[in-house]
Image (cartoon, rainbow, N blue to C red):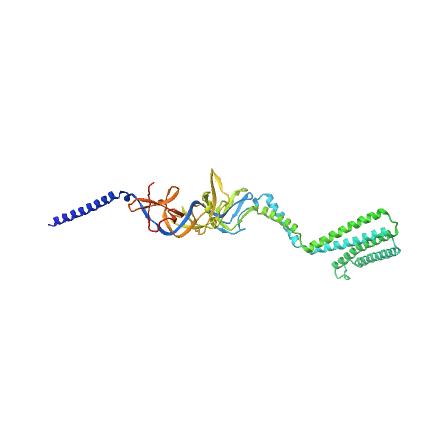
Length: 470
């Protein structure tokens, strides 16, 4: 009895299954086309148009430092991974191993620095000497003018008398000074070890030296006054007048130069002189610094090719330094797409070496000119990686999606449903009989899977055919 009940249930299931299959076959026979079309619903949502490209990561700036002189490495103060600052010393050669011209450059540097310091800080003695030169030149001009005047106008008795009196007075001063020198020398000559009149030997020698200097000045004054007197009392010679006028011209030129020198010292060094002196100092420094390597930028040491004791040669690579404050990606964009790319557009980056992680970036440079390589024109677009981490390193391969445009809450149609019919874009929908019928549409931006539906007799939820007839 129990077995009979089981067989009845099995028979009923077979009949039901057979009926369902029969019904499906019947419906398929009535509408055979309906079962061959694959469809998808139109959806409403946000859509992003991107441009896919690829490139490689690089640092913002890379500097390779080469040795500027041959020699033996004395010290290397950095290693790969160290962060360094501008002008920090990284390595140096032993000065005992340097070529002679590098050693001699230190002497040139000292001389150049002294010359520059003298320009910035003129000595008071220089100003005093320049002012004395002015006074001497003025006296020379005065004498030359007097001589020319006398030769042109002829002597007057009053001038002759004054000149004679000046000569006698100058002679008297000279003789008085000579007597003072004799008197001072006689005081010590009596007892060379006794300087009681002068408190010390140094004071005696100082006074004697001053008197002898005064004797020279008085002798010159006497000779000048004697010359004037002789000129006044001698017949006028035309040659003397010509010589006197030439002397006056020369004296005025010397006076002008003396005044110019004083003004130059008072107003400070000439800008051109300073520029020349500074250039000389910098040139000497550059030559002296050939034995050591300094960081030209802030950055991180990424490669060191030297160790103490190594023998190196000029232009041999020593240290590589990278500025990793910014990581850039050089990507190639074809001429077909370049006009869609603009500075400031966001980008998403995926690295082959960091699977499953997505980085962000920004387009920072779009070149005006492309490069033609074997008939293909590409543009080197630079993308700045805005969120780098310890896993991002120069040289890594990157896949970049540049966001060209983004729209919100639009009707989206699957790209595989779009066809071209008589030069117009269409999608197919099924009619009441299950047959695909074309509907003309207008599209906006596209992503890799969907396009924006801007116009067409369609709405969200409508079914479009994904495999319409060819």
